[in-house]
Structures are given as structure tokens and as C-alpha cells.
Image (cartoon, rainbow, N blue to C red):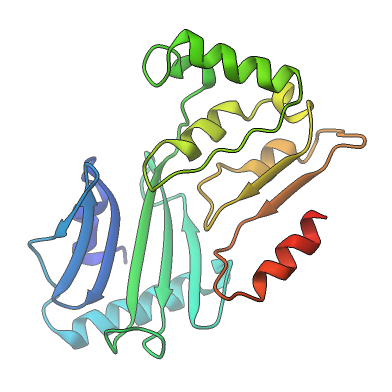
Length: 212
């Protein structure tokens, strides 16, 4: 049991996001353009059965529960990490469960590899100098702008040991960060990971408290 008709989209290198809002409504983002996929589940029962099996199969892997269920699949495809969110029909605008799949590369681009392809030498030098001087760096932007790619490329011992790191991510786009840092002695350094999407305003108080 895999991802049914969605496997074709998952294996498509141009597709980064898949959003299923009904059995006959599948939206995708391909090459930064959102559009409707030319495919559909056979009928609503087929779609609901697929979701039910998906929940049963991955129940133990959920990182969030309740009306928004999220898990990370690193085994389906050796090239991609899939972050899958299942939205309960109780909170869906479409009155049926929704599925959101976000793809990210298993093998991340290193900071050195970005120079020349993702940034020029001047930009790399500005970042390197900011890190060495322990200046604060804020990286943000719309989806697929490269912020997460840059953070992944900058995660190495020299950067992590230079100061505190705050990562606010709505899913596990930041690659296995806990595995990378669990054996490092940071002394008085702190790392804050806010992995889950902030669903409600009162969650902001929790974030502020943990970052204080």
C-alpha cells in the first residue's frame, strides 16, 4: 500500500506540493506554479478508503494529532522526504478530509555547493562574516524561495557552535536536525526548534515562552 494515484505526482521532479481537497480535486505546485492535476480518484469512497488506510498505516508516526495529523515519510522514495498532513473533514472547507504532501530532497545542498549556483561569492562572504561576528540573521520568504535550503546548507558544527539557533518550521523540512546535533556539547548554547505549524493565536504565547 502506497500513495495510490498520487505516486505519479510524488515521483514527478517538477512537483513540490500536492493538495487533495476531494476525490476529483487535486492541486499541485510544479515549477512554482499552482495548477490542477489532470487526474482523480475513482470516486469518493475510493478516496476515503485511501485516507483511512493512510491513517491506519502511519498512526504511530504522527507528530501531530487531532484534526490535523502529520507524519514524515523518508522511506517511500530514496530521493525525497515527504511531509504528509491529513486534515479532518470537520475543519475542512470542502466537507471531506484533505491531504497535503510536501516534498523535500533527502540529500541537502551544502553551503559550499550553493556558491556559484544559489549565491555569489559576495553574498556568501556577507553570511560568513555575519556568522563569525555572531550577528543575528533572519531568513524568511514565501514558499520555495530557498530559505529552508539555505538553513540546511548552513547547519554544520562551525555554525551551530557559534551561537543560539532558532528554527520555526511548520514541518520537518529541516533535515534530521535532532540527529545531527544530539551528540554535540553546546555548553551554554541553546537550540530552539518550533517544528509544528502555529494553528491558533494562543500558541504564540507558548512559542514566546520557550524562546525567552
